[in-house]
Image (cartoon, rainbow, N blue to C red):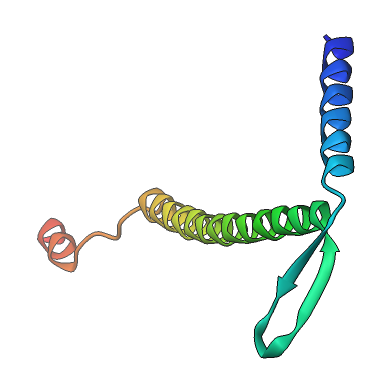
Amino acid sequence: MRALMWFFRLLLFFLLFGFAVKNDHLANLYFFFGWQWQLPLVFVILLSFAAGALIGVTATFASLLRKHREIRRLRRQVERLERDRAEPAAPAPDAVNAETL
């Protein structure tokens, strides 16, 4: 199984390497205010992929933090409810007076 995974990794590497070699011509990126940047096309694609991955990880991380906070809040609530259930309830003052009479 490991040999098969290494084969697929090498195949993917050579496919991506071939793609990079085939797309080595320059691409112009035009920004606002007349700024221009010339890069090989493969770097433009790589930067776009990296930016998308970073945005996706950031969005996932924010959602993960929100869920952890919610879990922590619910655990505290469960602990508080279990603690309240474990403490014996004090008898009502009327019940004590009725028993002593």
